[in-house]
Length: 212
Image 1 (cartoon, rainbow, N blue to C red):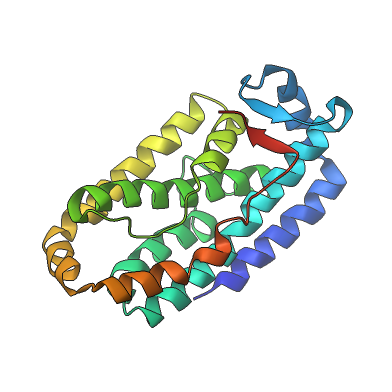
Image 2 (cartoon, rainbow, N blue to C red):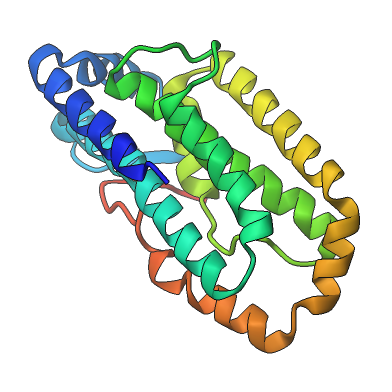
């Protein structure tokens, strides 16, 4: 799977950002209008903190996909996980028209948001069907921050796209979910979750957080 191509896109976008400061200028304009629940330590460093957080969020995606491949092979869940991986990598390599083809950190932020939000929606739908999450990583807090940084109503459009894709994926595999649920023993579920544990704090950003 061409995850290295996603990493190359990120590297190219970082070089472009150093030259243009496009994302940094965009975030600088937004800092005063951020929701009160989002806390940024150090007013003078707010745009810097946000830019670092966004970059960390983007770079998480190819790492996330790599672990999904390894964990799904170990747990023999490729049939379920690989279609999700294909959709998420396409958000970067063959982005939908609503996102566009621009090779910048701003566009990659939108692609990363689609990837993480899709997985969040699939988890929600899978839980309703099977009583457990499919991919045991919680990106909700990070997604909420990125949702606001992208800005409404556009981020809402991206959410709708993710909901539709997740519904299509789950609906097309409803019978297989029932069969798979029977075949997943407590031990297999434990191993599957264990394979993800070391990723749970990947986006623990001290300078940008949500106060609940």
